[in-house]
Length: 215
Picture (cartoon, rainbow, N blue to C red):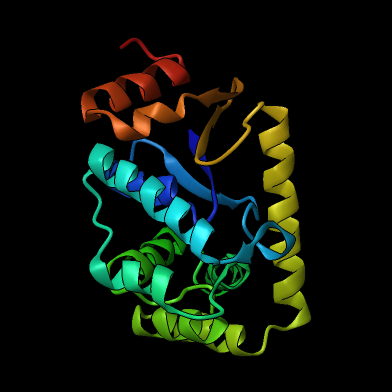
């Protein structure tokens, strides 16, 4: 079975889902694929003006309350205190695709590193230089190097990945992220994203039910 995680690197709820995804990855019950939708990349991004920053912070507090994931004071200072900051996931998405090209199967580790850098260390992962530095520090030096001067292959691969994720979201009626699609030899189906925020027994049961196994 393969479980596709439709996400965006700057999606707070996707960060909130990180512990459940780590559990899935470690369990070996399914193969985990990342599908970046580009929701907040490029034209989907926007300037981090005070009104939007306040909205983001309030939303993040709800995520923290429900999931227990930390949103640090350093992160809040980044959101509120950096003039001209942008809310744009294009660079982080490029970085993750670069990992996929250079270290296949390790994109989730890269996503975790970028999430920790932003939400805990308070680093601006909308900045391509910061993303490259984070990836280099996490052991992805080759991906970081490609990110410093994105080549046509990397840009084309990123475009392809985003377009494929958008098509999948449309096919399964996913209106936002995070979203989950489980596939096996009998077909594919969307699972309720709420299972990422509940207890692990329910998550395991949903995966078994989604695969057609007896709970």
